[in-house]
Image (tube, rainbow, N blue to C red; front, side, top):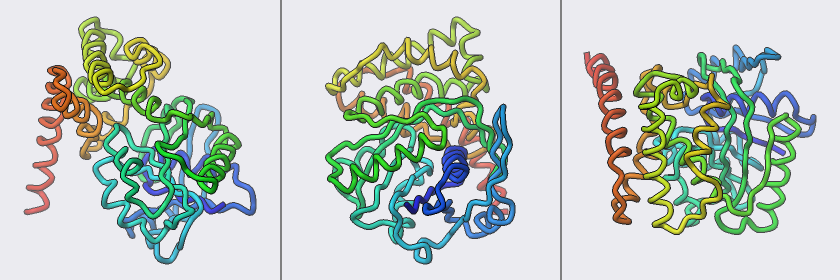
Length: 319
């Protein structure tokens, strides 16, 4: 298989490195970056993968021209949710009707691509609880093993099912615990509950996941945020398999050292995915007449933090 990973962030570099380290000779792993200069630098230095047990520098080919790469068998979309639409336009030459396009965004705003059949590819979705910290361009640290779940929102057809099985096998061979779900929507909402309860609070308080549990007040906020999301899901008829609050608190404990993706974004002074996470809960709450005051408030807090440094960046660029 030819597998392309779009987006050299924490998760993109993680999947690229793990697959590269385990790939068969007949397979090809590519990392794809829309920034020409950064792609050139990553080609020179490789991807540095660290964990508690190993350090590997992986000379993964990094391309910035989809036209020269051509169509791929599988594409993993690891870009931020707010970059997804532009990324899909950029990636169009990589896709055809048999390409499996796997979405790995946080939140649920990307689900529209599975429902409306807007793509020249077979859309599939994934959730992953792997803990990965972005240290520098092309340099990541694997902070905690998790589980990756794959699936379709609508039937993938024989070709799509075969590609999904092949990808699942490749990920397991790369020591990434992986399963295929017949109800990926439920799994995506289960991940959303966890992100709703953890990500925004870690960014507001500048704490690791585990540090959120050291304060009774913060634990109470976790529970409140998640219960609001649960109420929205119930109003929409979403299947809920496990108690979302209990699951979120368990993830906090299990990933105690992890720096959430949103806190990493704040520390790197980048835009966050608040709109796709708590923002989605707030928007769907309004549509379904479910109050979400805690989620509304965390959105305001994150956007206030973002505005502080993003406006500063704009002023600097204009000068």
